[in-house]
Image 1 (cartoon, one colour):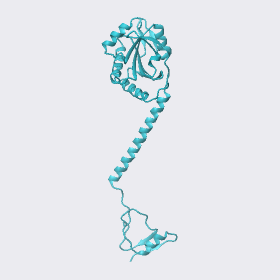
Image 2: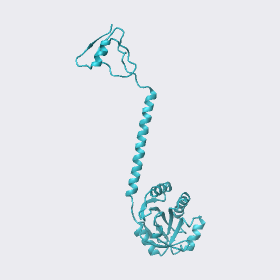
Image 3: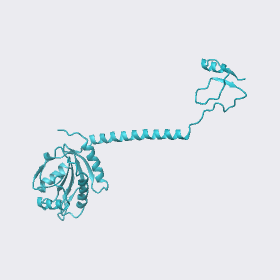
Image 4: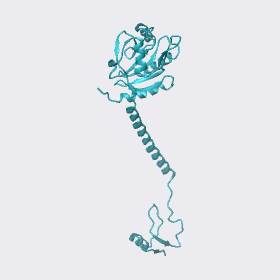
Length: 253
């Protein structure tokens, strides 16, 4: 016969359970009565709880992984929003240059547009073709987005007249509604690049311009938001991500 020796201060339902003498192995996890049960039919393994099955552990790990992944994505998105908000490098100065179509373009003409700028010259045999290829790829990927413009400023304006720039643009199949080539007096070009865009520009001993290889992204309000190295193999993808972030920003009128 089963019997129990219960200590003082145990819960009433445990005491009643012991008095019932109906001692059965537990089939589910529960709190054991605070008493000592002794019976010839019982052994030390009677009340050992069952361990979780492998499928339960897999489910727990999957849920934990999903929660961690969701938290990381949320943090990454908020971090990107914060960095975009705090990123403006400087403001583009006012300018007035001539396009490949012979039209005058000013900073005001680009207000409300996001634009990507680079500095080239058409007779360059060094890095300019590489920069132009980056811009061609951006032009292709942004062809349907009328909120984004591409601006290429010549650093050799004495040679790069509007007619020369127009031929250059036609040869690379640049859409004049999207991709605009600018030229103007050298002093104004130099002041714009060095003072406004904060990029180097110099004339080498052989008369060739030495210029920045960076691509710049400017937001709708004329603020410089990023510089990207044109030599970077991933520069196009980085700029597209930056442009996507800026497209989601409201324009300040």
